[in-house]
Length: 313
DNA sequence: TTGTGTTTTATTGCCTCC
DNA sequence: GGAGGCAATAAAACACAA
Image 1 (cartoon, rainbow, N blue to C red):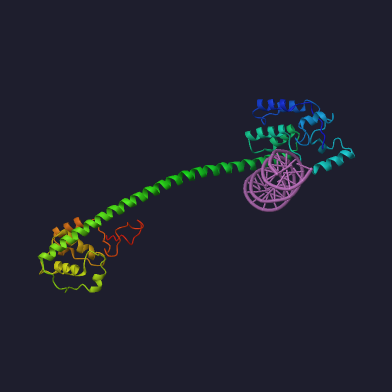
Image 2: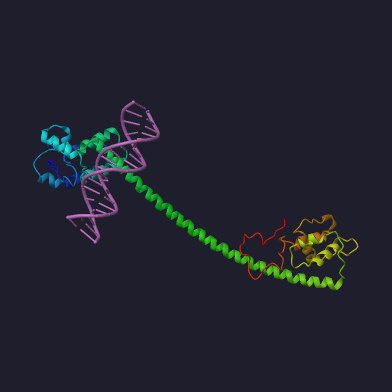
């Protein structure tokens, strides 16, 4: 253990000084007075190796902690001791660290003059002071990163909670949409059956004779529209000899059926009434799914499931 | 007392700036 | 090219449980 002489000072006095001097780098006068009023500086190595108690207990030597580097008292024994000691690391004393911390709070960068002054005040080598600041900056950066991480995590948790809430709201709305859709489909189906009955009772079915091929008709994805009904209806509408249905539902159904494939009736062929009826009855203009294929007991698996909806704009 | 994990001091190598 | 900063790392000192 390296023995070091003390300057006749105490750590508690030093603490008082530290508190009274907010900016130790600005001037070192009080510190100089404190450390160097005696025959030697007061900092005497690490807590483990040389404490202030040690300073008083070990011997009366006035050798400072790194005084041995000065080679001012070099006997062979001390030279050996110096080289022996240099292999070991020494922790700074509590007060040295306290002083360095205070200095670090003021400014975490170290200008050359300040480094020299601190080293002088603390009885350390300038390089030790530089290293201490270097390591202290690294520790500060690590702490800062931890703080940043915590802040980000908090922010993330908050956003996640918002997202989950929105997700639940979305599911709820989806359920409502599918409920309304079911009702709408059922109503349309009821109207369809009614109008078909009316049509059949009033008008004998004409043979399929228009240009619409069986293949094309089969493309119509509407279960409520039987193929012959579609064909006859179309032939009825576009056969100049046949009376035109002005029933909105019927017309709209035809339009709906046809809209699933490329069949654009010449709008000029339609009366204004028919156009009005179309626009009234077909909004939103989507194509009903095939009734035989659709399972209306359950809403669509996904609102985004495009196969269920067949919008035709 | 000892093994082990953590903290602190110090070194090394690379990079940037003047 | 030298000085200084930084990241990575070594190694000593320290804390603490078993």
